[in-house]
Length: 397
Image 1: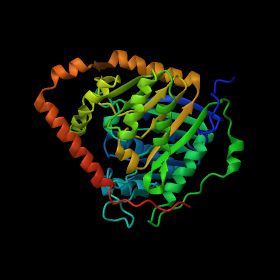
Image 2: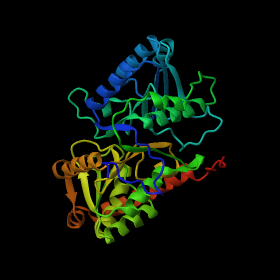
Image 3: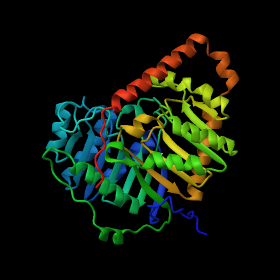
């Protein structure tokens, strides 16, 4: 049998002509991104939730503008809510240099506006052949700036057939805008023949967009929890699983699977962290191993199972990602590669995390804290309902 696992019938849509590499957040990610921008010859797509005009944003913008000036078609799509504070002069400079720029559903300016439906994915594609997918925004917080440690995040570099599919998706997202902007042409099937990828790694693109009836990433997590047999590790910021995922986690533990959750220690959204802590007692009582990452703010969104399958991207383990935001992940089935990632996550658990036990939680959490955690949990759930309750799903094609 090759290093690529046999694909089950319920897990289709994988392509094999791919080369992958794990890319860590911070300077490693941004050095890789800038290098790919600088080497692009024809087309660049960058689609991201947050793009900020700070040092990191200016560095990326400079590279994009230089690419446009040498004749590369550059398409930059940012979320209209999270990136609404971009200065007009910054945007004008991009456009004057030849960068095609627009915002996804800007607030109060879009005819199809849903407040909670945001462009949350983070994807870069160059020349239809190389790509980066992860949870990393274009902002100093995600970079190693002025001796400040970047938020902990991960991305996947992929080269091959999967990059072609990502390019097609980026074209679809860009061309779907209501603004009269430059259209971009997706790659045709003949582009596959030009790929020179001497590797075989099973990868598939997964999307979540409830309004468009896409729940692929949700299904990936569901299947991983359902079919894991040995160990599953979930690293997720804003960890607030819904009732279905909670039941699947408990069932996995009952099957003898070691279920490990890496949650944030310090957090940038304190009410979300308090709500998350409300679930600590439930996790601990049900045999789920709980670890808090302590070295910086955890922002990664990755899950590995049984040293052979993983998913990585923008999807948080909560109902905002499930029912509101537009998300994009990559699933990988490859024992050598996934084993390395799983080993790295276990090393992070041992070296960079504090294990939370039921005794620790009880000892350090008083009644007032427990009451506040419950209130925070209810408030966050109500907020999720407000964000999504008026949605209507579009009809299937």
